[in-house]
Amino acid sequence: MPDLDSTFAALSDATRRAILAQLMPGEMRVSDLAHSFDMTLTAVSKHVRVLNKAGLVDVEKRGRSRHCRLNADTMKEASDWLAEYEAFWTQRFDNLARHLQAQED
Amino acid sequence: MPDLDSTFAALSDATRRAILAQLMPGEMRVSDLAHSFDMTLTAVSKHVRVLNKAGLVDVEKRGRSRHCRLNADTMKEASDWLAEYEAFWTQRFDNLARHLQAQED
DNA sequence: GTTATAGTCAACCAAATGGTTCATTAATAA
DNA sequence: TTATTAATGAACCATTTGGTTGACTATAAC
Image (cartoon, rainbow over all chains, first blue to last red; front, side, top):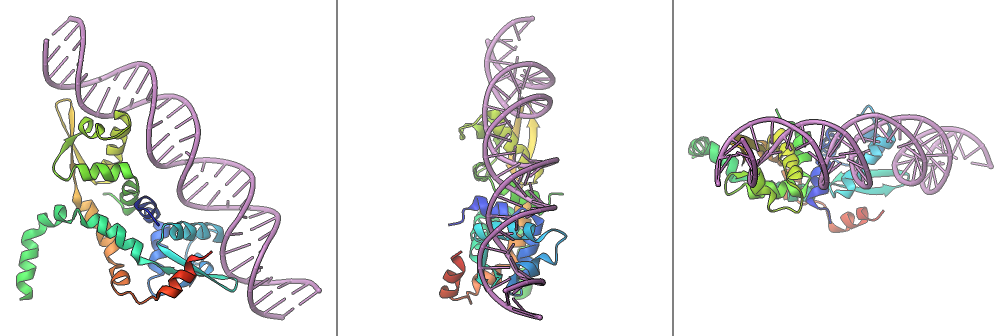
């Protein structure tokens, strides 16, 4: 049930975007993520919680670890919202796009 | 010069997204925009300033009016960032059961 | 001129944000 | 059993945010 407000808000922090990038190859524990950042485990845990509440990351408790993994469905919703404006930026590059399309054929 | 931080932050507010939607058909003055919202002109003016600083809206002073228009190039940057995750929502390799398990706290 | 309109600026407020430290819970290891 | 590890919770702090009101600037209209 994540709304666009919390999704975009979650994406507005560089640390959280970096967390998402780290999760691309596969799931990671919260403490593994924390090693990459110059902040406390508590801070990273909070960021993960924000991402989780925004629906961008799923967290699964296994033993005493929390395993985090991307939930890209929510990103798709943000992407879909932006896509409604696509015409406003593709129009400018229309000529280039046609040119590239012609080269593909 | 807008960074992703301010771009996504600007997009995280429903009022500002509504302003962007209103600007799709064409430019509008700040006071025209303000008519649509249950808040003061000052508040709308502040939202426009946030959108302008984020590079999402261009503002041109004409007479005593400020005319606002979309700048979709910045939206494209946000869209491009999200697009790097496209593979994660187009290829749905995660199964539903695991997803549901992750949802429980 | 005087007055109305468009908009910003400044000050203020309550709530949210991003970070810290310290304490605590829960699971594993010795 | 005891100690260690993984992670969250609680309290705190400074800054930012989204809104207000009231004063102000600048343009346009009468």
